[in-house]
Amino acid sequence: MTVGSIKENINIERRVAITLESAKNIIALGLNINLEKDYASHLGISDKQYEEVGVKFYISSSEVINNSKLILKVNCPTDEEIKALKEETILVGIFNPTKNENKLKDISKKHINVFSLELLPRISRAQSMDVLSSQSNLAGYRAVIESIYEFEKAVPMMMTAAGTVPAAKVLVIGAGVAGLQAIATAKRLGAVVSATDVRAASKEQVESLGGKFLTVEQEENLETTGGYAKEASEEFKKKQANLLKEAMIKNDIVICTALIPGRPAPRILNEELVKLMKPGSIIYDLAAEQGGNAAYSAVDKINTVNGIKVIGIKNLMNKLPLTASSLYAKNLFSFVRNLYSKEKQDFNINLDDEIISKTLIKE
Image (cartoon, rainbow, N blue to C red; front, side):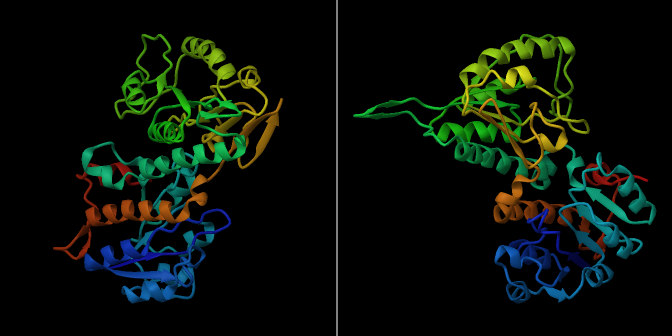
């Protein structure tokens, strides 16, 4: 059995699905690996390094696809790549099934088994495969670093003979994996940090990292059984806006991380709230690609409003491609290991396995 992976369009995606470490692990399972020429050269990893661990190379992506049973990717395949896919091929990656629903169903109709890892169930056995957590963790960290770069001021409090520099104040909206990492990073850098989330259960997590939790009084349960946030009522949104008015005036940097699976990002900061910040303040919107948590945010743009920089981002992982690839490749290896049967020496699509049944795209 052979696992293959082809190059992504590096102008859009710099991560790779198979690293040197994961290649060794996949081969140790008894599988072969095919890669496209110059697969990770943009990351400083040569084909020769891969060949030394037992990887075979082909000149074109179509050759890799034709000679591989299972294809590992980062993003949804292009139309040209889809044409090259053979029946009974297995395709695994982060395919954004909400955005690419029709395309993925069309691929499935070709008798190709498509697994999208955003759909993983939140069970302990799936934690090592959780691509959303591994990538969001990095996104939360990098969002703080990028924001501080744009802020152009010192973050920790500094006491000098010339006077005292007050600590920067950071507000994190959304206390999921990305938000919690943003809180931890901002605290390590010396900021005064506060956070808010529709899930009351996140209060303890925020406070354990040294952040202040801004609470909206509520009776409704805004957490799904899977632990994700869900859409809030209009009444809750009004209460949240009133809470945020004071917070927006006080804070220097706002990191937006709020997402609802399968839905557009909730608009939390309207035009009025954005304009309450001081000139020179920063809003970094990690949800920009899904519509944005903040007014004025746009994908891969910095919009300046009343001296406030509103930063939208599409793929923050392109800023950390080596680390992001390392974690993503480990997630994929765990999934492949679960899918592969050493006894049968074949990939076993066992629909009784919740991990497999939940991630498989149905026609």
